[in-house]
Length: 80
Image (cartoon, rainbow, N blue to C red):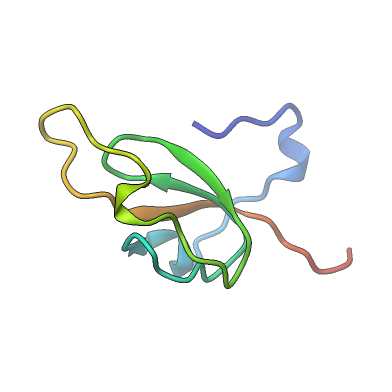
């Protein structure tokens, strides 16, 4: 699970980009932290870079299903 020390820097969003599961090797629509919805592994990816391929990690527990990445924290690069 992604952690932060000061929640002041994290804002809640209902943007649909947080609802989409992406396949391994897909282009990341935003820079940020992505979570594998099967096993919980998290990674940081830059916008327009590819998410890790299917063989990046393996699921070992029953019920984890296929590797599928979901954006959980968006890193906004725009000036404040």
